[in-house]
Length: 190
View 1: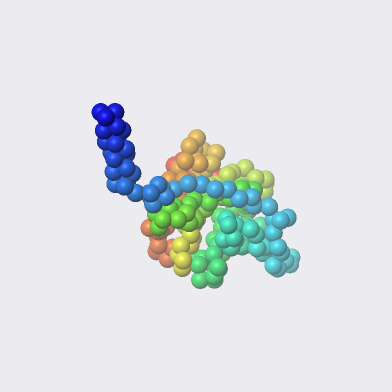
View 2: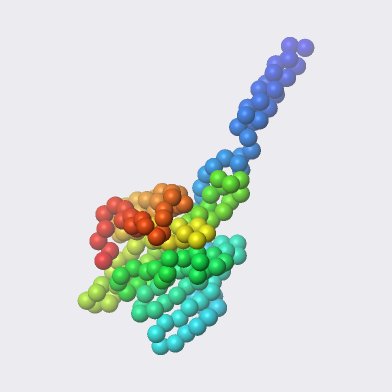
């Protein structure tokens, strides 16, 4: 009888703890998922001597548009790209995109939704045109307020990926119309 009472008390304690903390998915947090960024797998929307644009698969159908003009690349996100983006945003030097897109997801609303992306830009030396720098570009994904929010020099910072994730997890607090893109850590990519 004493063993039954101990088991009953233990079961009730575990149940009370579980009810007090709520379901695991309702706890705010962030995680990363990755998609490939391969322009050969994308649909060409427009191309001429001055540039091109593609539509590419994003995270779980999240729309992604890639644009290239004047040897510089830009990414646009969302269902209404004209409303959701702060224009053609790229880096000053000639550049190319890395082949992986890191999507930062948050479950603050009770389900995993993309709040930011991190992509590696390879930047060219202005004198030689040869890629020498690498910048992690953090982009906030927010209805009507999507834009670059942080730049991290991937070669000058040993913990560049972690710095980029920390910046991405702050997405939502950035005003694309008034705030300046933050340069985090040492920076000598261009």
